[in-house]
Length: 115
Image 1: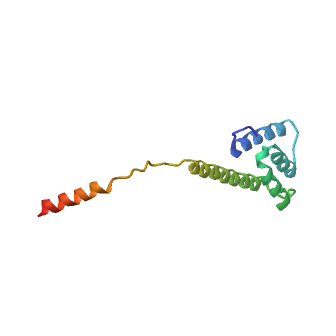
Image 2 (image 1 turned 45 degrees about the vertical axis):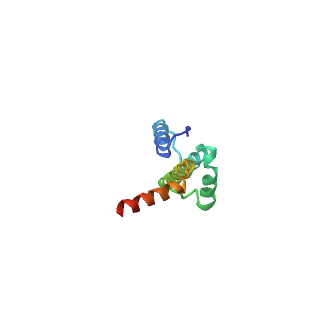
């Protein structure tokens, strides 16, 4: 998997390679395909790969289910990145203090104008 490549793009490329190999007479079992995909993921995906390996039986895990799980994780990671970016942005306002005398002068002017 290339840097900044999505799971769906990687899977499309992977499928193209596997289909080309099939045309040349080389075929793989589902378990081998699942392991190859898990092996090609970047190091940032290591926790997810470990979780999948421990929680699921890789010999019976369908390729489509693996793809769905990885795409869900990718979406979650992107959402967390967006939240972190939003948290880093902050707005600061400059505070100013007005003299209370000017408020009193305004109040006096209002009273006199009404009188």
